[in-house]
Image (tube, rainbow, N blue to C red; front, side, top):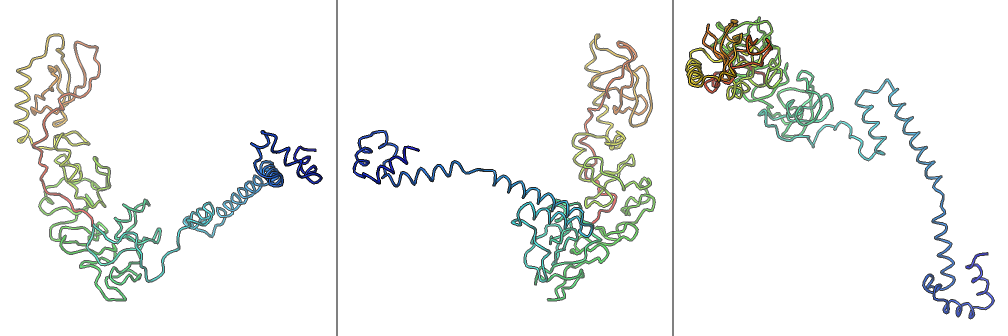
Length: 388
């Protein structure tokens, strides 16, 4: 029998004696300041709270985890669901339905992902076929959604910015009659202003800007080439169907203008201007992208600096070099830390292939690559068209 039960029984026979006993006992007064009946209730409640077994809660959590696991397996086995539907159902299951994505908005649509588009002047937004969300244009989708790039040819629906009506893609709103764009291409699903002179090239397969009168399509390069350089440009098979060597973006479908280099390789015009600030060579073949006449003064200044700063005897080397510009090999040339000049074209755009004395024929890193590229023709007009 516990001490509390003893107090309770004695209290039933002689309550006054129990009260005096509690008052006279200092330790009991500190632990149980209330009356005996309250003390009994508190002790019972506390002991019940401490002794509550957690096994039942753990079993419920385990059963819930097993049920979720089976539900996910069932969703993954359902062949009738698309990948997007599977993702949405699993997300809803794991979040308890609190953050499940909303279904595709009904017509008319009032809330858009991006109300303004900085890329095109138009009176409509597009409905992305991959996620059924509304964006200002396909570029807005690529920048904001985090999805794979949107295929412009898959767009089937638009939303009027005037009346918020969702409708099949066209150039006139079926509700308010507003014109969506000054220029409209039903093939590319493009709406934009005519200020940039857009036109559709059937050989390229999509729209470009700059005016159809300013470009001609080259079947060899598979690109619209400026009429100013069409007869003099270097033709390479599918030259523009490559990534820019600087930014790695596809140049054929890029919205940035490509630039033809004298060596025949292509690069974005804006990437070329940045590159010309610190390097005068093609990033692919390492040939000088500036004309020999423009670089002649730089080569003469480099030769003069070398003549005024001869190498000390302990650092003198004789080397074999390869010229990146004329592709000529030259042997028995005096090495200098400022570069080694090619005797054929006077270029310092050379690479040391081998040291023939002073060391045991070891391969050396490229030399003579410190020439100034500040005279590069960074302001040259683009040589090929860019897409819309």
